[in-house]
Length: 460
Image 1 (cartoon, rainbow, N blue to C red):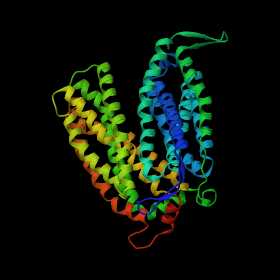
Image 2: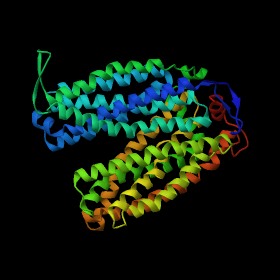
Image 3: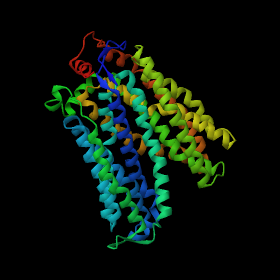
Image 4: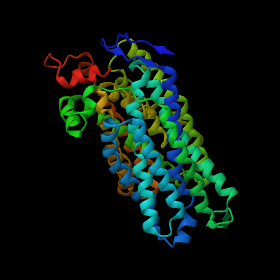
């Protein structure tokens, strides 16, 4: 389905000529590769004990493999990947990333020591850093701004689906292949079961990586391959747009922080306070978390796309601010009610409103950014999100819990964090509304359009 270039009501911006069939094919391929990435990164969590036993690892060493080896290189890799995506062929850069993490997964399967396993996990992390910035750079090329929210929400679901698929596929593989047993491969090799599982997951990735070459790489602005391909250009633009970017980033990080904290510490809450077993918590939270996000996120995106098409230029951030305000009392009540069933329902509902952070702020960021700086903008957010949310948010809850009296107070700690961070997110997002309208209409506060804004508008 070809969509010709046409004027929209959204501030006089023009929708880019796109082929929606190619666009949805791109969403499908990127989503499939994202599911693969989540499977590869999560596989080790299911193989902890056999890997520790065979490689004679300590708890600290395994913790380093699960977190530090992957996380550090995931975030370090984001910056050079963002530069490469804006400078070279995006499908080629994504192919390299998928190939690198697949080789890393294979490396985990043949590792014979902590150091080689660490290096392999680092390859997995650095390769997987390509998916977020790559998708954010490519998708705006195939969807006009008024349709981008829904497309991005569908792609964003791949992470949630991938987490479920990782446990399902990994669990099935662990059932069919004893991770601790010895298995003969083609009469040539004897491998431990966990090694064979890593190889079975890693090798197909080398072939699936070639799917990305089905995605065309639309021509970007003329400056993309010359001067505007480094982070100095991004930071010059960020300096002009700081009134939009600062509250945008803070609002996103506050919501992401409490979302991560709730997922991290809610299992402990249900075990300590409500007495559920590990198996009961896993099943109940898995359903509540997935259902709330999978059902709600596309609905939110559809509503926002329609309002944006009608000229509501700040709707992505305005809608997110209102959604997190609705989520706040639901999140607080999750840890206040005495019924475990009601608590899980409230948890699901809070996630249904909170999940907008997975899509809407990234969509408006890519609408604002010129095409040759999109991946860099996404990479910066990825690094900040990793450090301030994945790194600090769970620690914040732990500190508050300890300050309030110990492990049984984790529910109160989560209540306090939700009561502070979600309204704070809405408050900071409100400061980005006027600047984003000014950028998209070309009417800055001084009454004239800066050069960077002209670049952003030309990209659309």
